[in-house]
Image (cartoon, helix red, strand yellow):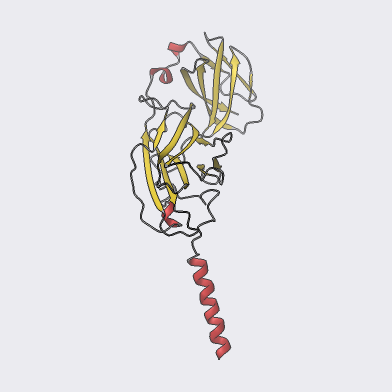
Length: 273
């Protein structure tokens, strides 16, 4: 009888460990486990899922970018900075997401691999800190990365983030969590809406292996993104030069075309047969 009670006791402890795993102060030093950006798609989950305390919400000025006030241009890559003032403890981490109005990932976040301070979370399409990037000097923390805007017609995109300021006591108590968000709109420009004004043509379309661009511009920068808003490739091309897409899966893509100065001039849907 005693042995049976012992078995039930152990089974109960095991069940509790599964459904209520212990919080660890060190497990996430190299990045968030994912799903903690405080976004709609993350069900509002943030760093308090792993660390004790209440989040201080809607921090103003934490998220800044070089996206113009007129809105983002589909297929264009922008610089994003997440920064703020910490508590002087010298330990900080974050998770950052970009989502459309339905809470789905919008565009492509690109980690700053040269700094080594943040990395890409492939399962969610988010950005998080690394073990190299979880420290800061003085009281100010900062991470920089990039975002390639999604396809035309995506509409408003919300950047969401949860920032952890750890007291470095080796546990999960006494830490601070702060959240922030920034809404960016899609640019409504005549250059995207009309082809006639640019004297530009993408041909053949639909296509199987190659397409070319006929334009008054002799040299152009193109960016190709897929139907989910994910970056595929970018390339500098000459007028009428064949562009090889033989290896791309069948489906539709969006081709964003810009002058070499960076000025966007046209976007068009391309069908790969």
